[in-house]
Image (tube, rainbow, N blue to C red; front, side, top):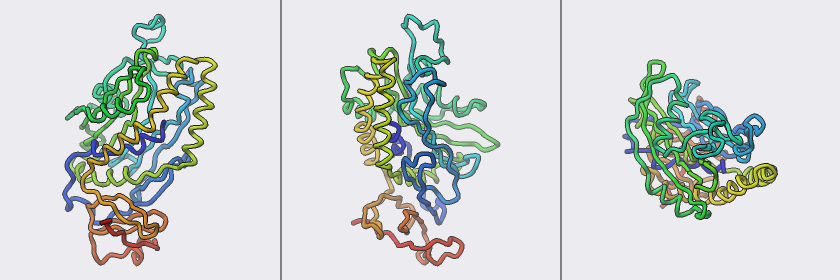
Length: 348
């Protein structure tokens, strides 16, 4: 279900933490809502731009309903219009491999079958290298600098798959890319899970939890704590979740009228996605480094944040400021013009 991958920004995307001295001396984070359907709240660095959000795919335009049941997310936070520094969540998409089908010749790769792009099955590394990178950068020469599989994530997918009789297969990986865009050399890191839905689904497979982060090559490591902080800040909207689940049931019922078997299988698989994604998220966050649990002085609730700055301030709206200046108080910052900040303390 499309509201789960948004929170999968975990230690698997990040390498060694950057040095304290590499970070800006002060960071202001502003709490915003997903702009289209208010599906979640997230902290955005002040001055950054928001692009995209939740979308609904038209089954008529897609030629079928397979990709119209779930809400899709294509959402990015960008330091500037060109996305010099950015974090980007991409939609989960159902694909279909027509190899062996009696009508394979009628549906070559690049066409659509029942609303699904026709594409041969591939593992996570191949998907990131051969599909995602060309999709994101069609006019660039992209070099793959490192790839690594994530067997612990794959095992977790298998362990939490509640429809094991479907004989699903999972693949998970991280890939690092480098390329030059507008004279800037970039370092980009991408993560995804590939879910092959098994022999009983007529070739259906999908990408899941696909996330991309990037920054100039010379400063990529320095920005990793910020990506940590953004990922940790996501708060899902329960009302949106309930409405989405009801909507999926209704849209699934419509699809049954024309594609009963495929829809039934898809819905059974979706039942396990919440548990799977939550456990993947929990497992990954256990490996995060340079994080602290803070007590929010306004709510007395525990909030996780980066420890790469000496002081953390928060207001009653959820805005966050990090600073290394012991004397700094954002309530007296005339340029900032924001009030109500109190200092968060680290939970013992």
